[in-house]
Image (cartoon, rainbow, N blue to C red; front, top):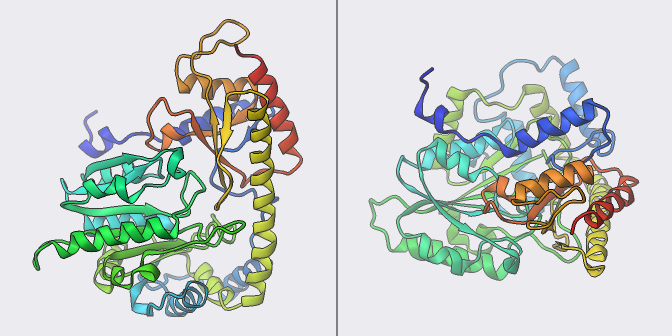
Length: 418
């Protein structure tokens, strides 16, 4: 069967493939420690009670018709006030676009800015930039970030890549790494973008930045979140933000996200999504508009939520560091943000007890799942090199009592290789 070039060349999701394998094992009765999904178990991390009540009230008030294509006015006003108060970014309601979570907004940004054959610069590991670039027929200009920069792209690595590019895709806190840009490094990157745009002619397309800050509320310890426009106000003309309630309020299934940036780009994104119909549901929009005005409820939820997520991240990090000190070939990056921990399991070239040689990182991933019952997502699923020994571990569905059990199972599996 002959189909479109896009559909025939689209790369399937490694995460979906791994998820299918995990679900089958669970169906057959196996106990799996599933740390793969960038989602939340509502029995562990429910959405805020006040948000839940507003959603129910909105449905009972029969808000079940189409919303405005750009997002309801009351919601855009609430988001604008929320972002101004919490992040100090002052954008008006016409510079906001609401959609059903971050994904359609990211797609719309790529569609609005990038023409086929134009350069899209992004670092790996990163979430879905490779797929969105493929969607628009862009030229992949990729830098692989490593542990020396906490897997965040550096200004030095990006500098030789920006000439002639149309889009620079950045994410902080980053999925899959749970790490963030430092103030100094993001300032340097902004300066590169501004210098590149200053070098272009008046009628020439500028270099724009997609800044995905979906996890920006979820930082831990002394880690701070920074954004391009606050650091360099001139970046306002070139930066399009992506944000949502999905992660900050454990509300991945509620599907309310927003972009904000230059009105000319937002208007084009609105037109694109108007044809796609990727609107956030009316009732949820009404509920979020009211909930974002409840400062005390939000502060109360975030204090508890962040504490619970951070406990899990640090407990697993400490466990990996203990295994490392015992001589096992593992490591982890200290938690900074989001719901992810970057871990390393370096077993390629080792043999299992039954004499099986682990020849690739895919073999290691399979061994972790079968021997340790540990399901994590390899960085090669996020565009990194196939031989990368690093993984994303997500704690969104993690119960505290599972952590010692998981670490003990991992230790037993590590003892079973030579």
